[in-house]
Length: 206
Length: 206
Image (spheres, each protein chain N blue to C red):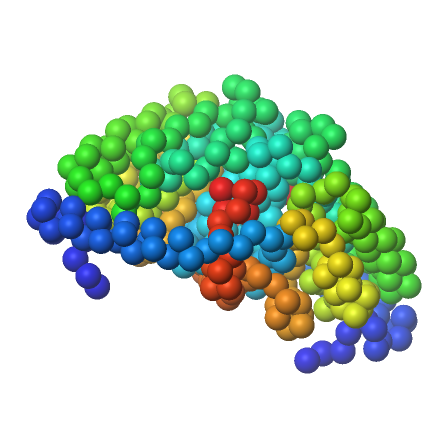
């Protein structure tokens, strides 16, 4: 491990930090492209949808228009849904209206729900939708379960407005999606309160 | 890999899903503890602060009172800051007001800023602060750099109100903090748009 500012004398610190700042400026200068990104949050850890909602919040702060389309969750997202109401027409929220997949026992119903939710997503991805950001929450799970086909999803994603950002969340992101994505983060569980008998709590889990 | 619902016949699917639901209910029934959690988002990937803000959004949706204390960032968090204004008095936002550490070259100034920001955090952690959730954004970085001492931080964290949740973000979470934490997630970078020359964009990076 390198030394920390604690151990470093002030002059050496100033020098080192100035060098870092110059290196950073140089790197930033090479980044000139602006485009709509495909952002994927995957992995077994927490924070995939939560980070998606954090990005939605940030976009709303900039006055951007956002669509949130939820493919799987339903009953547990009360907090986000209520909070987003503070932004009125700036945000469009659509939830498939069912709980987690493993709470349903009817495969045909699940497929029909996925198709209905996808139809809503397709509308948000259209050139004239007016959305600057679209969050497709838990889409990965629906793809993994085979309720939707990536061959159906990918063309709509690629044909979306050039500056529109799309956030896709859920475990098991398909490889073909990761290949097309610009920003991919894997959330890894290090420690979970369930293991100590703590129940799901307001504000944290829902 | 196990078969997906696509290949499975409806009856077997229903059976399998019912079994999953029962198993889940059984597990949930054992989780009875409610308490304020120490939540740590760390790792080199994106989404640490963003997931923190997503959790803040969720809490605000539930009518909870939230304090957001930013130890390092400043200029780049315009989106979140603006968006949180929609919630008025429900949220208290304090930023140390400086850019990233490597933009400053004065170690004494950095230390003084860290101390000032920590004083604000300490107030939010007091029993009578009235905050249901406190986000200490980038605290890990300040600890790592040695601008603040964990021995000073830990007692205040542990003495906070029993039901108050604390979210701590930043790379390199100290081991002693992880030990005391209830929920720890590591964000891992899989793919970043900077690598393809894409610059930081509104709504995504700031």
